[in-house]
Image (cartoon, rainbow, N blue to C red; front, side):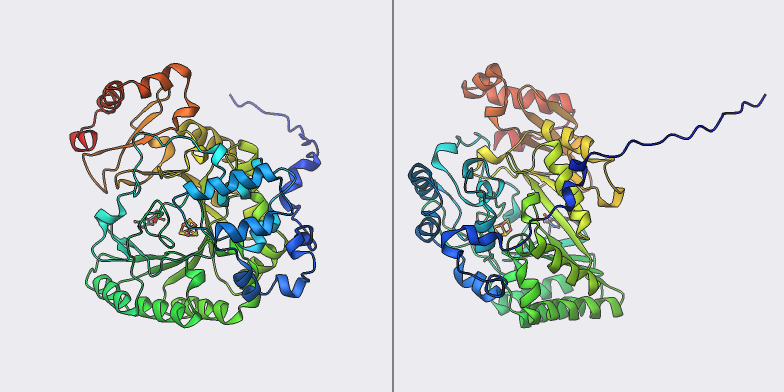
Length: 461
Ligand SMILES: *Cc1c(COP(=O)(O)O)cnc(C)c1O
Ligand code: SF4
């Protein structure tokens, strides 16, 4: 028997105006409300050299710039925050101008770059400085070869800004009061050694060129590195990774030589059948303004495919609505959201981390709100060198005590990798358990047992 269904048209109700917030980018000369930039015209603000020169590179300079816009309590709080921070300081005028100085404490851009002593939380007892164990997967300075067919090339240690949450705070930026940095490949001789290693490993197909940040590479070095890698026959894919477009988008508009250098590598790659793309690092929807839109349009016109990697950061993008807004806004400027990372377990930024449960919940909400190829995968770069894992793929998750156990069968078979939720986000009883001697080790052992994996080494480390 066949059944027939009457076709009734279902009219979707019109969507409320707030659904279009992602298209509503900051316009005009928004920087002029900062006293230090009140007289700065558009041509000057868009000049990448001006942005670089005016970037504040010490806590004192930053504090001088914002003195006129913040309260003396905030000023003192930030001053003490910088004294305790493991990262160096560098903030672009673009980023400073985007901070809502009427409410700097809760501002998503302030949270990423300016530490406040009053907000700092004690580190999780399982935190280490190089939580990803990059140094253990490093055959020579400036190269991390963890996965079989791809490697991370770190040709420099400087960035256009220094992010408080940086994974590589063990290496990036100048030494700080609390951290003596190790060295990455910073000289052309070290670059040549990295190229020789890559050329000697036929299994490598894919190189991430990061740092530091490729925004700080001179155009001739973009070409030198790009061409040297394109010359290696077994390489199929290159990605240039930069935070730049998120905090200094005008460079793409006014530093023509830099964009031309990147374009020449992308075009040469295309001619020899190799993919060369740009990876950006936008975290907050507010980072995307009319200037960003104009910059990303230039990349799009030149056929430079762009993907974004974000970090899930408390108070920046860790709610369903904020992450959905960021995702839609990235799609709107032709950037494909690629990954959202769990915040790495790095020191001194505990108040920025979120729980695995938050990531799982946020992911479920974001998926389905736009094109699948514009929907990021939420990953946990498992501490201890397991590599990126889909946040949903834990073998076991003790939500109460905030312990997630991941396996990485194709990267480090047979090992367990643990991620720990920030303790202040747990219930009172779980918080007490973490501070009682001996109990923590037992909870971790139980989680690993429940996951059915073994890793005595990690537990005893
Ligand atoms: C993230 C990363 C890569 C690239 O991984 P994808 O998942 O392909 O983006 C390569 N090497 C290292 C060490 C990494 O951390
Ligand atoms: S730009 Fe990237 S490498 Fe540099 S400090 Fe920020 S997160 Fe770290």
